[in-house]
Length: 417
Image (tube, rainbow, N blue to C red; front, side, top):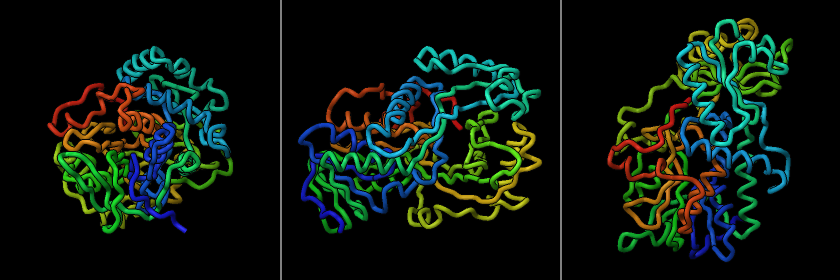
């Protein structure tokens, strides 16, 4: 039986994907604080469960590197914190570059990452790539300028992560309500006073953490506070399991900051975010109108042009990755395609911020593909904001106010995939 909705809570978290679940976990560190989590569908029902679940510390922005380091430590400790098996497979992350100028820029980024404490990140020559344990001959090193590598990067188990945070928050007293859809807000004198659930029940509160993924703009708009977050369809393509080549130990491989692949069993999961284009106007505020019901109905669809057929985008992805791994062109195929949404902002960086228009409303959305990667750090940061504490990370680059004024935010990220 579902837990009854409380009449009030000190903090209401909307959304039980990885970020909202992590926020609830960190909020419940404060003893005596009542936390209610509202989830319209199911835990991890949105982009969390449709993610390639990649994890890297190889970023160009100050805050992203620090968030990755924090999140890495949490994910490494996850079995101890929450029980259960490991959720972090540290197979590494390998960026391959064809062009000398791209490799030169990559070397500078590695120097920066090392200075920020990612001490095992390094630049590789083509010969170094061939010398990586168990990977000799796997890549087209004769045609590259070099690579960057971090062995403590890898990929994650997203649904287990969201479930772990949710169960941990419940053990510390949070109430979690699945099937509870936020349909409105009550406000008074420019401040939040409550969240309306399913049009009939109001949970009184003075603080709301909105972490509803690609639904966040629609939910925030219910309070008269739209945010520049739009849903952009992205696809994942899976090969069959290979008979004559072992890839289960492979790192996540990125070719020219574009197409990427990672093991899925002894096959590959592949992606390339060249298509489809973002909706017109998504680079500015206010964001373009999107039909949320229509988006939700087609969340898992692969429309014509994006499937696994010989003339479709899946074959383009396979062909592009065959430049990095020539053997893939001989033995690879696209067996299955699935989809989901990136929740993107104009600059591909999250919004981790109080809303300047409505006191008590705090945003944790717009992660542009990095939600599961940075969920622990984002949860920690937005919990700090909601509790009036100094955030663990510098958050000026994640502020909402500049986006509302169509101004550039600080600490630009240049490694967007």
